[in-house]
Length: 233
Image (tube, rainbow, N blue to C red; front, side, top):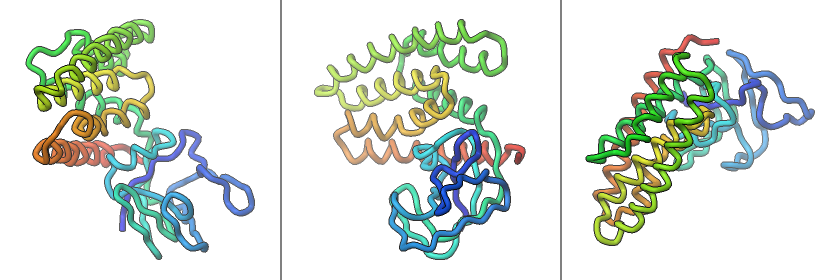
């Protein structure tokens, strides 16, 4: 079966092989594991969904892999005894853009979003396009952090009386903060998981959980399309 796997930016295997080496990962590389598999401990790992793979990312290089042999499945990842790299690419820009998209969707849940959060997303896009420098981007990020902190506290106070509003408010501020983050990996991780975290923190109904996971599925579809359009390298 095919799956997704993020690797470190130096493109080396995360963990040493039996001989202590960490080979550079290249398209066509085949790795095998002879020991009994144990999820999270022994085996060659990957995730069926790209959005799940981001949670375990060591860097922003994405690999599309073929998993074969013995396969052990978990909730959001798997491990197998044989993994082949089909193609790979630098996904840094895609992860930044994906974080911006998710943050904008989250802010749409709030009737009157904090202008600092809106500005942070716009600044991220401008920074990616070279329209502003690092100092200007950092200033927008600092402002978004302040907005996120305030909104999270407000959401916590409102949780007892209005769980749905609180979930939306927290999600919007958290995702905007993520979109303003300098590191693509951190931004993508935070953006990808904001809905589930918000629901867990503030939502009190099965409907809220269902809505959060439905949003996550839609986000995954978009992310996988964006990744699949990358030029292999």
